[in-house]
Length: 245
Ligand code: F6R
Image 1: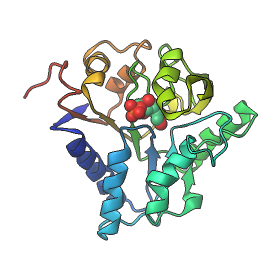
Image 2 (image 1 turned 120 degrees about the horizontal axis):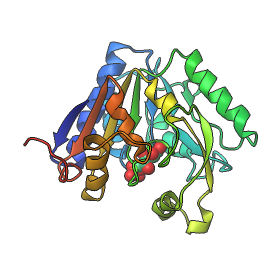
Image 3 (image 1 turned 45 degrees about the vertical axis):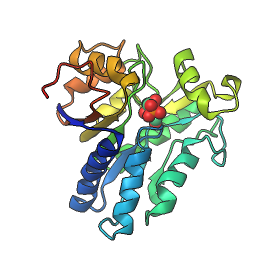
Image 4 (image 1 turned 135 degrees about the horizontal axis):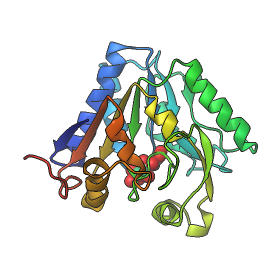
């Protein structure tokens, strides 16, 4: 596990975008695993800037997103489908058919999750998976005590995740109660993992996840066992971790 410490969110975003850009340059038809949430917004802005400068070409890139709320139509502005189009897909020359997000409108959860897992495998797996980190250590929507072996599945969101995500909805009651998410087993199959994290409010969970024991109580701790993980964290997020200056 490599940890890069950056001065702030801006530098974290630039470094993460450079790592993703290197992947796109080295393998133009790569499969990028993508995340939503507030952390990757700056990274996507940097990728768009790279595209606008003519440094990056997404025409052959394929993407698979980590997760999606169950039951939200794709044109709802809180769906992760909508988020990805707004922050990245509609701003670069990626081919819409090459972008994939679990379909939250599919009522048959098992069928949709099996389809999505098979899709990832049929694409040859994920070359690099971008991850954010939840305050409770979740990755994707894999909440504490999720099995490390799980593939794409339907989850019930915990109260703490509903609480954290309600800022994007009119009220906590409007936050969907379930989501489809890649499982930890799916995430661990990615060839490379890039986790980004920013802010003092994540300092405790960063210390637990990457400097504490590997335990299902802290889902992200499993990443310690992946053989190619890069963490890009700003100094506030690393402020409680035993890391050299
Ligand atoms: C998003 C996702 C979540 C977020 C996490 C952190 O696709 O799967 O695990 O990465 O909740 O969210 P932010 O970045 O908003 O703090």
